[in-house]
Image 1 (cartoon, rainbow, N blue to C red):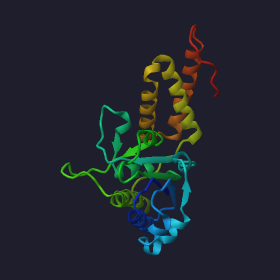
Image 2: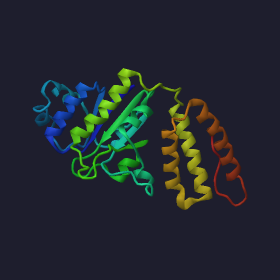
Image 3: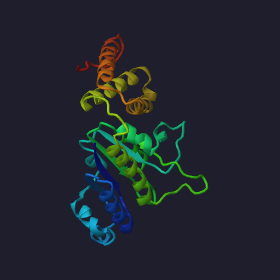
Image 4: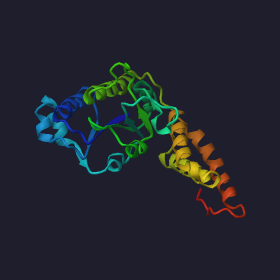
Amino acid sequence: MRVRLVLVGTEGPVNLGFIARLAENFEVDEIYLVNPLAGVEEAARYAARAAHRLREARIVDRLDDALQGVSLSACTSAHKSRGDDILRVAVSPRELARLAAGRDLVAVVMGRESTGLTREEISKCDVLVNIPTSDRYPSLNLSNATAIILYELFHARISGHWRPRAQPDPHQKMLLIDYFSRIAGLVAPHKQEEATRAFKAVLTRAEASLEEVRSLLYIMSRAWRRLSQEPGVQGGTADS
């Protein structure tokens, strides 16, 4: 498992410098900076012997660019999980470590100190992570939150505590989600976006295996074909 740390709009050079040190502590493989507000050179003053991490970091304009090529992406949020908001249903850092087992490249996305990540940014990730804290003082400093998540991933990596399963081809997984979304659009268009997001979340948290995805893909593709060919239904032809 390789880890890519994605920092979105980081505002404070002190936090950015401390996070560079954490990247060394927990053997992060890559750092991506998405539209950073903090200056890299100023942050390097607080990074000690990890200053090279900031100078080697890749700076991009869009979160989409930072998520290219990852097999699991985890956005973070300080908000507690809400059952009535699918986008806000979160896992703990330890659960993330379990989900990450056997993945080739895992992206951890940390938001801005002041406002965190937007709903649109969260929707781009496979899973949302929330760190359980006391209700009396739930807020965590950005570098502290980053330390907790990176520690759990590092511990899982060196201990071999979580046993990886055979992972499905990412293309097949995306195709399965696409078929589900098409079917949802036919049977309940007003719920298509919400249902697709829920299906994607369930598929990720369930750690669907290669065989499970293939089986579901077989059924979904044929269900789409049958539904889209019914009289009066505007669908089109799906590719296998």
